[in-house]
Image 1 (cartoon, one colour):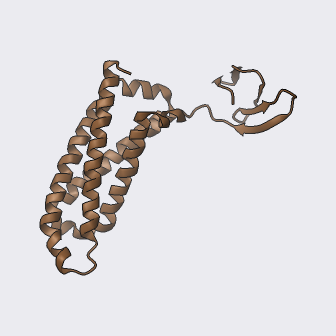
Image 2 (image 1 turned 135 degrees about the horizontal axis):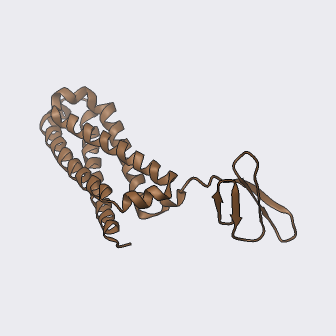
Image 3 (image 1 turned 90 degrees about the vertical axis):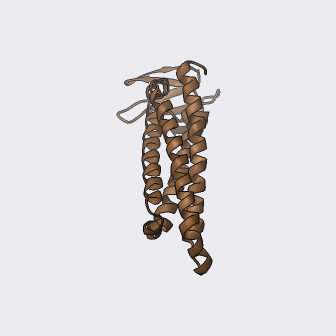
Length: 198
């Protein structure tokens, strides 16, 4: 498939053997073989920057969104009924996770939709400070939740048959620790990018 750049409705072709058919719809690329036959028709959207997802920052963002969503689901499905028992640790972890997943999802959407946003935001101090603060928040909230779960839910787990809130909350705070580490490593890469190391 050829590389192309769209400037409004004008298109510049970089390789021979490709025709662009433009109407009022987005451009359609047809690859033509040497003997003139069409080898296929593929619709392209030049506004997406999907190559970001293959880079280390893109993989970090995907891991943060997936693990954060799993942690959120675990806490909402199994921890809500136990929130009165484990107290503020549940609220702390839920707030940290919700804010992190929402912000990372917005950043990922911006990076996919705009290559300019990717270069501008990643080269600013915002993402470095955001990742450091989220890493610290995840580690502190996970530690608080781990203490509360082992102090208050473990005795209930020993005496109650089929008490699944305890293993679910263990999984939630373990994912929280993993997310803290991922955000810390992402913050390190953001800092290197901010300082000009590629």
